[in-house]
Amino acid sequence: MTPGPRRKLGRNVGVMTRELIFETADGIEVDSREGYEVTRKRVLFEEVLLVTIHRTVGVPYVVVMAVATLLFGGLTLIFQFSVSEPGAALTFAILAFPFLIALIVRLALKLDFVTVFGRRSKAVLRFAVNKRRAREAYGHICSRAREVQRSIEPAPAETVAAEEPPLPPAPE
Amino acid sequence: MLAQTNTRLQTQPYEGPTCPRCGARLMADWIRTGIVRCPDCNGDFEATAFKPPSRQVHVEHVLATGPIEANACANHAKNAAVTACQRCGLLICALCDMNVGTGSYCPACFDRLRSENALQGATTRYRDYASMARISVIAGFLLLFLGAPFGAASLYYASKGFKQLRAEGRSIVGLVIVVVFAVFEILGGLAMILLLIYGLTKGTK
Image 1: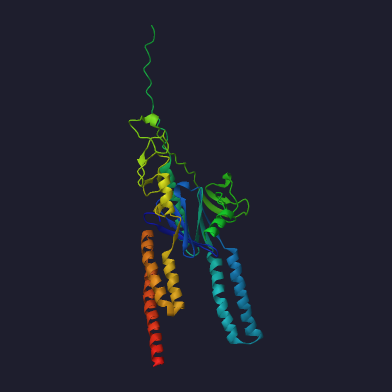
Image 2 (image 1 turned 120 degrees about the vertical axis):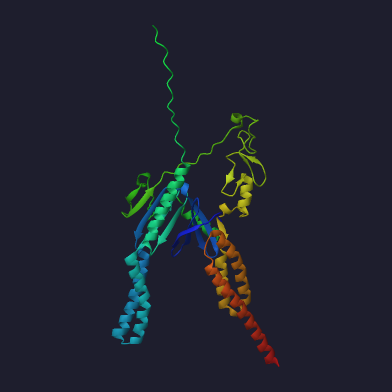
């Protein structure tokens, strides 16, 4: 582990990924979890090339939630109006409700992604609810990268105004 | 696990900045500050571009400094040594100085320490003991008559997990809850075994 404190910046949790992103003194650490094994990679501030932020809906998630809502919603309608089984209709309505809420929340809030591209690796942070945190993380990473890169930048060659030697006396 | 990771790394090599929306490779012209529209997917994203300076290692030559002023590097006879390896004591030049924030090591010692996971700043793979403690405590609840060994294992992993979480500066609240459950699990498991023995002995009489 990196010596010194780490600050959690965010996470990137998807269907196939489970990553926690931390900030350290010299860069960003991405801990990818596979069961109880953790693989760590780093994006050093001194190697950051590009930091981006964008907002997206996440089409696969929306499609899955919409399909589930339509499926259970449809069954609710069938049991309510065709079969006249209010108990079964209520059960399917309760099943459809969380999917509907998830769909509405995603469509309303969307997902914010902050991506940090280094020379050799990249880190992705995903913010589902708190948009202010995404903007803060983006600004913070940019300022840290700028600060570190400025500190290792070679100092410009000192330009010392050389004193011109006095001209020899003009020949008479 | 390692094979899976290697396969993933081989199939998706990192080649530099891409469009965060579609993953298309961004040419140098598109790596700029401001609102960028991806030429491939037409999606917008806000970007801040950097031009990271390349770190230059200044290597002194023995000839430049003079043999009296400087010692030669153990690996590069022409280079002047700037420090000594903290493990083996070899004099090393700026090129050989492997320092990841935990002291200066020569390349051979650095490789050795890294393979032993003894260098904190170069660790890239480790076990998450907090997760192991959680999994163990859940398994113990599912197999309650084996609660005692699972609970004990959970406590063992939790003790290691506490050190790990503290070193990382993370919250230990979740692990404290796991410890409480593990203690109940051990007591419950032992009570079940005692009840079983009691029932068996009473049944035989």
